[in-house]
Amino acid sequence: RPPPPADPAVLLETLRRTEVLGEEVLACKQQIVDLDARRNTNREALAALRRLERQGSAKARASKHWVCLGDTFLRRSHADTREMLERDQQRLDAEIAALRDGITQKTSELCSLDPTIANGSDVHSAFVRLKGISAKTIVEDMLGGS
Image (cartoon, rainbow, N blue to C red):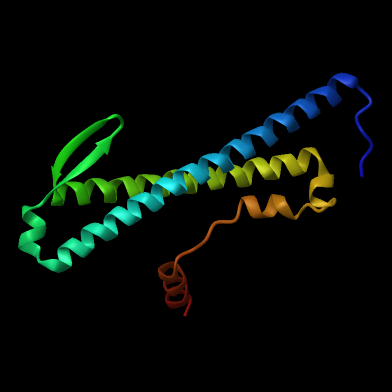
């Protein structure tokens, strides 16, 4: 473990930054839990709409559903309701992915500020910069490299 900085101001700033990052990570995790609960609710609603569609497309097209937007209830067509829920699912997925990326970066910064968090390991810094590649990219590399 490296010795603490000799300058009390540097030590205080490091502790402050560690606390701020820790609070941000916890807040992001809670936000992910809240968004995931909403995503599950949307998934249930989409499943109910699909069940209605299986009963008959004419019946589904003719039906209207009550939708809650904030503190207002609206009656929307089946197609509009499904489209709205699907767009909301995509937005929620993107927000959750962004929050997870932020948690990874903040955790890495926390580990660099306080190496005892990762038992002195520096492996966390390598994982922050890792990006997945698609199967299409792998195939293109294999065909292009032949």
